Length: 266
Image (cartoon, rainbow, N blue to C red):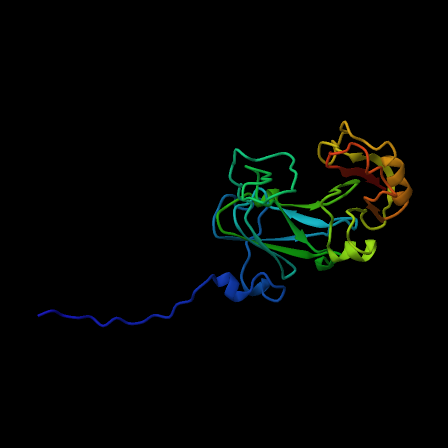
């Protein structure tokens, strides 16, 4: 005769105790005992980290550099920065340095950044920072090096635009500025409290390269730079229409033309 044992149900919880206690929130930080150390554990999974930080100087956009961490969540003063996971994207033999997005779409078109982290910097709104005593809390799931976590500032000194004449931008902003929305428009906008002080490169024709390394092609309107300077110099933002009034659209018959610009903000 078989004997059966009665199974007693035991209470259990799903999730992490730290999440249930809300130890990433200002009013939950003191709910547990934190171990103070000058050398926090590295490459240790399922670990909570807490550090007091000052806000980065200036007013540029701020990002949290998590390249040396594995996978997890981050909070600043109780506000969730979000889930981080700087995993490397897959290597692909069709990855390109530059791309013409016109024409038919297919899944492998214009692949860039192959083998690089899918994401490294995570935006932190400046409005979340206090003048001092900011609490950054990290929950690391896989393991990483928390001593290498850094705040980075996005400082823009130059900006670029590359627009083809036969691929007009028809977003609402372009339509409102241009009118009918039938002409392509190149937009430039500097960071707050700066303006366009110099046009380093401008070419309407068949320019090549990418931002920071544009070069003129064998088709080039010599008035390109003067047109852009007239519209943009001294302004925080500007829009240049690819029209007959601005550029010689009759040059290089049969060539698909575009406008490439690199300008300096100061």
